[in-house]
Length: 356
Image (cartoon, rainbow, N blue to C red):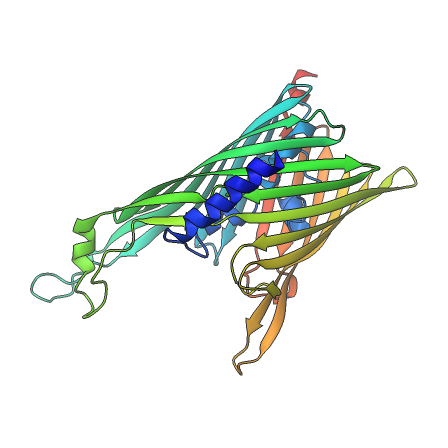
């Protein structure tokens, strides 16, 4: 299995470089889901084992014992942008499971001033209209145990839909693959996002484009490219849960998040960039959870031209009772990184409680 996967991966990378590669294409799919995971700085590739595994590592869906539903909402940029997530998962049998999830990232009621000035050069505020821009990601996940003890794998097939008012829209398609392995209470996880690259095709409304083509002399003279490629990303994780005097537990997890391009990550080369993340979860009787994590290590250029390492600390808290779990996370504590802090809430429900 490893050799065919490597061939597909190398082919995808070579194909991508012949297309319009965007360093930050479909970035809304990288924000993350589930306040519990975000409180641990997303370091859950190895430990994820519930309905949210469809996002973090589809192999973890094997841990779903009954039908589960997860919902999350977050606001960004002073409530200008809204980020929503819904997920569902259920076991197929003792050896496999499947899931479905939907992500929406949108900005609504944006002022459209492209027709603010009439044909006689007068400003007419009645010509201002509103439009919305929204990105959607729909993911179908499947997981199965391997015959090798401790091993399980999962795959995602995802559809990307992006809409910018009446100006442009696109469709995209891609795949993820993940594996998990557990031995002696140590958990290991590997997730390759966009393993075959995710390919987006854009449809530009030329009538709307022509309205702004000559608004600024020398600007917007050519239509944007109508296709873009999202390069593969690799996430490697390791985790271990320690039980302390029966009632207390500590889950420690580490992730190495790799992009195959040069970025501002703390470890960066022409070939790849690596951003480490560390997360901790303290639990009491599987009822109350306290979480902390740090990640998003970036080399940030200061005003005087020097570089400073920025990072994103996260904290979170969770409560679980009879199959219902409510989690909260606060990201970017102390404004240590260039990312904006957000309050994130999520809820997870084991639907089996309604049959008891």
